[in-house]
Image (cartoon, rainbow, N blue to C red; front, side, top):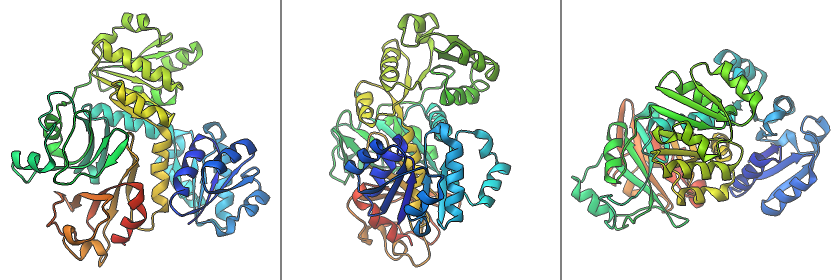
Length: 450
């Protein structure tokens, strides 16, 4: 595909790096030549110095040949993103998507307006991040969570702790000891910085991060095997009252007993007091452990750290863990810090770059991909495909498909039914198929479903 990225900030940088490894032709536009040079040094892209709302700049970038235009200038440049996306569509780009920072635009009646104007997708990273956090609070035993087909299948990610009954056992042993035909399936293991696609003889190790596709009703049973359990969240403390913190508090304050938001900026606290009438707003520095203890941190069921500082978020989650908080979630925008956060006991991390990449990456897939997610703690992706009639995936049993070794089919939803895939499973036309894939297999797997 011919892809143009408008905006060389953190999101644009990450997208360029990820997409350039997929044999796409990538052009990136920004007025900051230093940023452009940094991206050009690490990714196979064509840098264009200029403003994305300039017709001349878009013409230099080859907008008439563009298959996908991605406007990802920083959050405070929402108008630039919208205008550049509209211009790109009018000048010949086949599909366009734009980053926004306004919830109002995502209301159904307003989304239709943008669709009619020609923008195929609006995405608000902070809103998506808040939804991710809400999912993790709902499924508090997992470090990552994703629903497929209305929740009939789920992806959960669990770390193997002391007391897990599957440590030092092979996949085959676990299956045989639990009745053979299990309603869940391990599709990947992250271990010491590497991601493995497990086979029958793969042995689980302590501290492994295990990615599991499960039927909704079996999620708790899968957690018990790994030594984890769900925590009912009744009391929640949020460190950071920015957009993400506010959205999480707004969703939770009518559901649970207590929501407490700690925010350093006094003016922002006044705004939060008006927008969050049922939450306790505290003006203070959440890095101050004494302050957190005064606000009953040990009695909280969950602690969410979403300030702009990854270091502060990780350290405060460590402090929360030390005093007995059962679920901690940290926003970590520096990708290098994600594994660090996991190694020091943070239960889950949120990264807006990966979230944004997931939303946009499926636009580059030629098959029907209703959902996709780039995963924390792993260099892999989980995708949901719709199998087309007479596609390769529907011609043979799964074991005979010749599916890439760096990918695995985890589950299928067919109508109202969910199926955990085995070797003798047969995929039918229009099945929704959940696939876990390493980057090396991404270009191959979509061919099985089109």
